[in-house]
Length: 347
Image 1 (cartoon, helix red, strand yellow):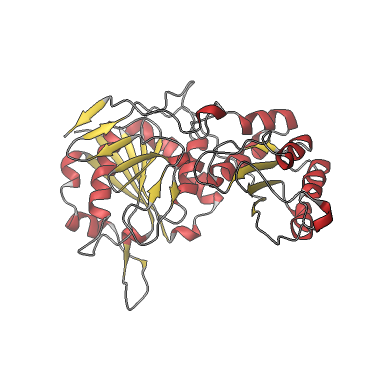
Image 2: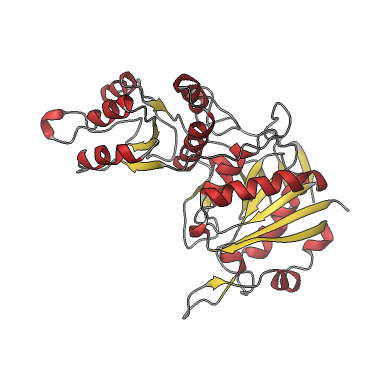
């Protein structure tokens, strides 16, 4: 049988309790073996408890430890499944995709909206689909949820109380697991498998909103090494100085302090084009970096890594604006991506 590593990090999937009491982390592997015994018919699965946390507690230091552990353990297995809470799942998946370049085996992350021990839980099917995806899916970091396989650094959590909790607005599915399991080829990464576990966590994610006082982010600049700005639409923000809310001074001060500003869109579909409107062009003139159609979570993690590995300003800018592991569309005219070819089938 193929060998599979299953790492548990916590999340709703392994919790106990529930209404009227609060959900809390609980023993997982005993529940897994009793509620999902068919999982072990698919592979020789080695279970490891990496941590047992609500995903709101997952921090960059844990991402680095998790990437290091996977890098060390993967050569002994045909693939890996990582169970994780849904709230920060897209952040962790993005982080692992950048930290494990050159992957030649699938690393599939999954979770659930209800604990595995509950009768109407979605955890059982998510686990089975994730194991199958880790054995037959593309060799990259992905998220398996509600019978869909998403590129990890392209996914967003979009729902709280429904089973189809994730979406990938700007990139097609890597797989669908219905009566048949169909997988796209996925990334074909160049170079050997590597570990890039360093991150600079002194960054900030700022969302533009009507009424934002520019003095607040300006006061923040001395405390951060980088900034991701969630702008309106194609990269717009207040520009008119006569109205008192212009954010242009923020870009100027960031440039003076060598604090990179990566601009992404609040819109889920498509991405920024800083050359399209006056405010975007003004930001470009002050050294702003386009995040294209990256999700805010992918842009934030990529900025963390760019700051950790690239001290040179130009090298850092090239890294942030160049697709590394499929996190952004190479050509702005093709922000929707192209449909994935169905290359593998499994029953």
